[in-house]
Image 1 (cartoon, rainbow, N blue to C red):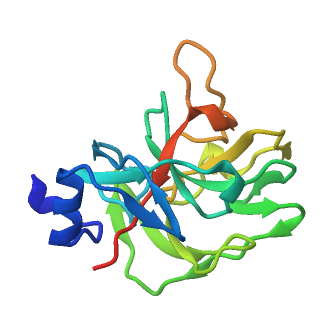
Image 2 (spheres, helix red, strand yellow):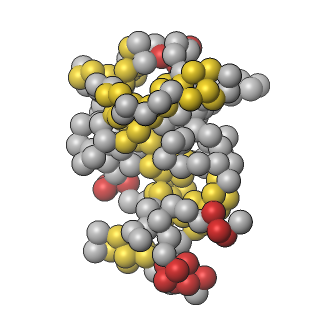
Length: 199
């Protein structure tokens, strides 16, 4: 299964992890690296199911929209930050709206595929402050395509999955007998930041 370590890990990086070495991220030495098997479709197409995911310690003060984080006690253990403390976030017709700005979805031009019995298209999406767009999947109208505005309080994040019609994220509450989501994620519940090693 280590052959599926396909998230950009070089042989040198794998050896460093095996030795318990530190990761250097934006000039900081961060300990420890954490690796776990990812068993979710929530972050397709960027993170496939059945790969090993690596995280580094999370620094809340450096958090940015677009960051992928590992969330404790979540059925989908990696999700993307869409809203920071103080932001107002909602979804309108499948588009994320952050502080009144509707985030455009740009068709990637990839051919639609069938996932979970539905025709699914791939789009580019870029949150304010995000350096490069990320790709999301959309299968048409679902219950999570329209949500009320939510003001993100201090020490919380509004998170979304990239596989928008499958992810159990901040659009849905974490309460109830069968929670559909994670609600607003507390900083204390962030287990780490997803780390993409360069080849």
